[in-house]
Length: 380
Image (tube, rainbow, N blue to C red; front, side):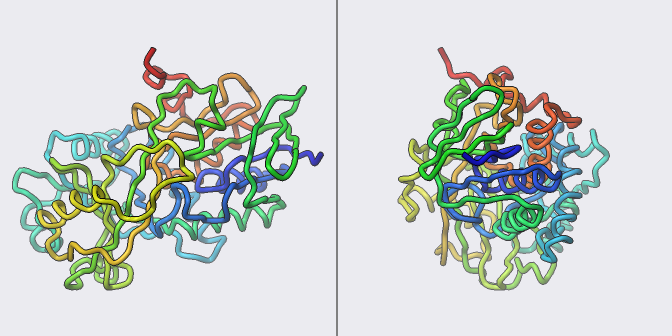
């Protein structure tokens, strides 16, 4: 049986970063991934992901994001690839709604650069959008997007450069404590390590059944819609966008190909029970909310998509992550429940999970991401 200092279970967005950080610290590490590198079966695919700092979900995320930006730049420099684009973010909604009010609160609390967007500026600088008169809009210049598959591959490549071993197309059957170490059993072998990092994505109920969490795993379609003009082109200075409307929360990206714009709904989603049997075709419920949104707010896009993909959200009841040591195993670090907004954090979460697995503690403030916090448990 082969032994390592650490085994990372799951090598998607979070797991690839953890594998990188463990290897970069000189520890021997094995990564085990059910699918391939930068695969399209989980939560970390679809070409782009939003990154932003003025975080309306919870202001305690902001210090983590500041570190994440630094680590993304470091990874991009190392890989020689443009993994991150700071093209800016337009966020709009009613003034007292969670998105606008929460973004302003986080910006004030942490001294971030956030600009109110006047009605005249909306008309002049954002002609592709129809923003209702009762909405406020803000612009975060530090916002932008990440190239998701390239980022996962870059983390994996650097991990391997530092000596990490990666097994793909291998499924973890179970893991357990054996004396002072941990044993991982897969469909291909048995392995042992002094510590584990578990980043299971939507497979969390099976790999971490001890967590008494009311998981909600939902199917999330992403669509590319043809643009009727160049109003949304990245090459012309367009940024990412997020609109909180009465019909839901919608987000998207500037056109990178000069022809289509990627748009998706952050809210709603069809709950699933088995990540392996997700319907990845377009189903009847997918398009109507997006068509209604586009007709009301982005009339410069066709409502007939040319392409789509499906990813998965693994939601916690409060929408915040779980990043902690396993409540029953001091040598096991867990990162799960990223609730559809975790990818931007992957390098810093990978670093924190490495701290927890190798050192048993971290200097980062993550109490609000505790695995035992109030509100996560299943109702009795």
